Length: 163
Image 1: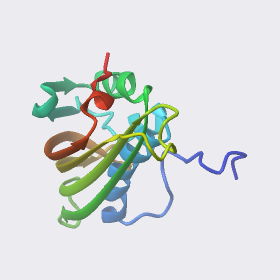
Image 2: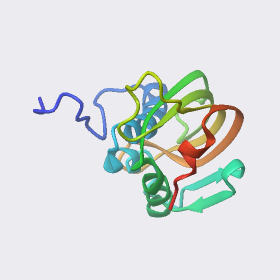
Image 3: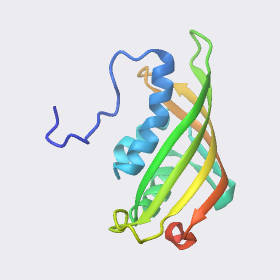
Image 4: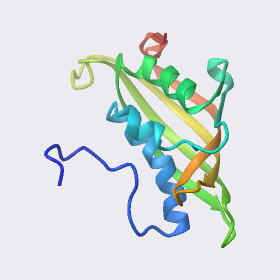
């Protein structure tokens, strides 16, 4: 086991296809919240060019490097907690692609302020769609990701810091 209990492997053994599909989504959120760029990046396909569509932030990004750079240029200023729920997976046995729908509640605080009880952070609700593929190494990864922010609350300046 790793010395740091929060260090996570980029792949998990013996997953069913649906577990592997969900694990791709979980690597995104864990990667962001742990500030683990490699874990985050491992969630995106190495075959072809992954894409991210995030109209609320006026972002259309292409490629693992561009997506991870943009997210980590923002998250480095924050402590975050991204929670995924209401997951639905459309997958047919033997296929190498799937579609996932999910909802999320996301908390953002400026670095060093998350545990201060009188400091307001930023909360968002979101809907997500992921097109996921099984790469040649038999690991499921995101090929395309759509983000729709459905509500916001708290201090808008918290998520304003993005390079």
